[in-house]
Length: 244
Image (cartoon, rainbow, N blue to C red):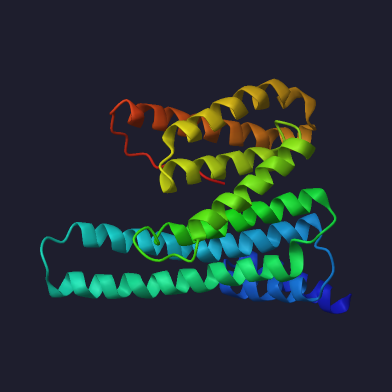
């Protein structure tokens, strides 16, 4: 218990200092102690990796933008491609680390909400890999992401109310996967429309503490639906889809 408490305290301090690499290491230590994560620990684990990977994904998008604005073959383009490959390798390593932690230590939990949460995490990190795997042999990351999201989606439909924040978060990210990665635009929009209608109707049934998060997620879903609907009508909107 002393070791777990110490690691948790260190992770919280690392979070305040935005030291995501350190926070990841502390949370990995907690996971490997082998006991079921509390909701607080589970959220800290997710936040550590989300921020760690988020900075790499942001860097990858910047490099991609630089490449796209370089005309013809030249040294700068070659250097940017080389640097992008390095970032992609770092992303793949970190994402696979998360996926291995989930598979070995977390996914077999008997707590249903935790199980749903970890399947969502699997979908998210396979999706992150798939973002830069469109033109490569990608080790089935597209299919693995779809399977993980679909499993989380089915479990949350059976066990969580339509306005539950975790259920809405799954819908948000699963629909982004359908729209951006699989380019199944109608499927993504239909999923969001159904969830918006059910979630808004159910919003008054959930606890006051969860209602704020659910309202934010419902707004993000509505924002994405508006963006996608406009795009599908051949209107160009520069805003990127939101994800959780």
